[in-house]
Length: 188
Length: 84
Image 1 (cartoon, chains in turn yellow, orange):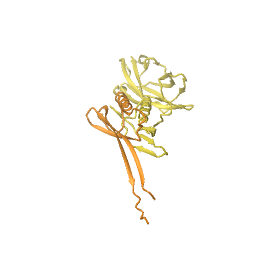
Image 2 (cartoon, chains in turn green, brown):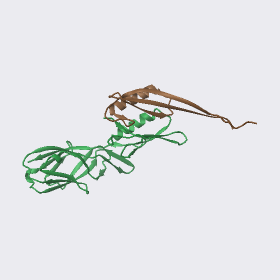
Image 3 (cartoon, rainbow over the protein chains, first blue to last red):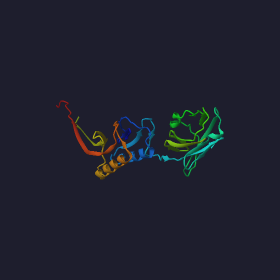
Image 4 (cartoon, rainbow over the protein chains, first blue to last red):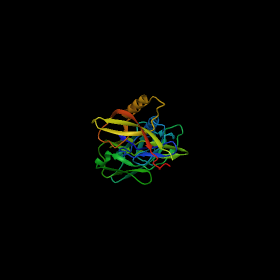
């Protein structure tokens, strides 16, 4: 489905000409938005200064945005491992008892030359765990993924978990990352 | 006081979607120093490939920029100050 964006332009002399339209998809890739701004900019002698998405994030065509690959470092996951190459979280359910909590801290690393290490809040935007009555999965306020075993998990399963995209600032650079889908394998 | 003449030009781009609906947006002061047709076609291709549009259209994919036109207007404001 198409993504609509706002744009505003500044004519010579500093007058701002704004076109307000409704954006319908807040998850537009920032690199795409920037390139689109540049191509639109080429059609006018005005200066297109900003592109506003519905989530009010401004995209300045003069700033370089990085599409980053998130590398998750699993910390304190006693029966959980994470494979960054396949974005797969594997849970050793056979050794986890009913009622037990597994708290996993996902710290994110940039897969760029700068290799900045960040810790951003995790926000789950889609998860098939919701249909799985044996487990409860959630993100807490301290950037940890929580997995509760409501019932003893006796059957192996594969589900998907999608974490929201976001942004963070490192020095003078703003980094954006898109939503990440993780495969979760439960080995009973 | 003499007459005031103001001129303005704008480029209107008509977006067409797969359900044949259209949305038009305008860009002020088109850059006539470049090959505008080529730049518009390039923009159209990029919009189709990445499904990025301007406007509030929902429910259908973007197909192409269907039409583009430059409208120029010259407005003369007559000075009606009595002479003499």
